[in-house]
Length: 219
Image (cartoon, rainbow, N blue to C red; front, side, top):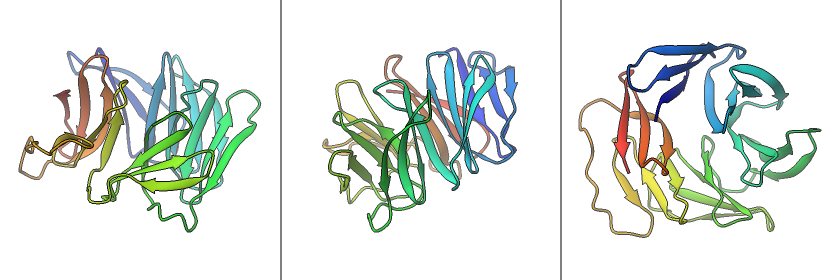
């Protein structure tokens, strides 16, 4: 990991050197709090307020007005598409042409507000987590939501390339879905995990904590 990218309450996006902690770049364009960040190669996708922005080499090259506050956004695994989630729906659109590929209403779905995207498991579905409600899977063909971990209180989750789902709570407890919980908290004081970026290729997760520090967790 050679860089860490963070989103601020002011809407500013900052790129940090992971080794030295020095600030490399600042990206500006949003006027609201950054609610999510996602990356694909040299491109980045950010969500703040009612908008989603696509960045390339530190420059904002596209902006979508969603009409509702965005809780999360990311690149679709099929390529050439992005998704975003609001309190009203999960929507997938093509980057070129803005054509809507799919839209699934969250009304009466049982999916709590504030849930963030995890990944595709299996192909044809999307996975969400957060707000202490465990893990929820959305089947894009049937438009049905399924709760996978109803007893869980995880805030963050990620999918390893082999399909294994990893879960992390706000105290830094890490476990794998479907396996016995043998985890212990990384700390027991007032520090809380507020955001996580996962890199299974490099075997590390970067944790943004409530004390303003970024910590790295080996996977």
